[in-house]
Length: 212
Image (cartoon, rainbow, N blue to C red; front, side, top):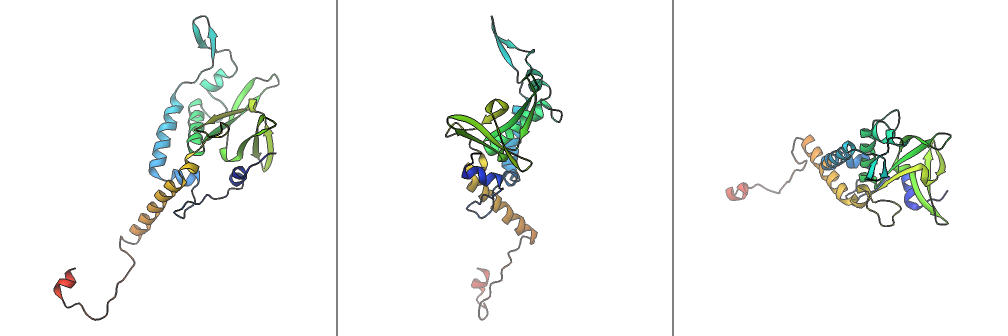
């Protein structure tokens, strides 16, 4: 199964260290209020937008309610999620990681029967001999899926294969915010008093010096 350095790092769960000294992961990034609020608003808005399967008609386009994927997108893509929750999750994955993935399961006739969201840190797109494939880590086993079985939503991309997420592109910015947040929390935990004492030899008898 083809792997690259970035993919191996994600699968092994290696921490991505920012210049501020704190590891920046998706969960750590979400603990920063501005990022959580922004992603929650955008992903929630996308989740509420309608999504249909369309077909061409004499008048242009119309809903194809007979298509097997229509009810998956409109009602429920899988037994555990509504359409709203599914779209919100994939959009949040796309913002944070640059990529949102779902596995398309099919019946014996090849028709889609469910869309199962995948952990973007455990999916690696690759090309071999010009053909696209996806390496998936499931139950500690690597498997390969064909692109027609994977729904892949990409963010801004350099290569058209994988998207760029906030965790990677803004690692130092996020790390700086997290470091400042942690410093302030510890400062107030200590009673908002610096744990430092300055000692000088002799006495400050000069009134102006004391006031300074």
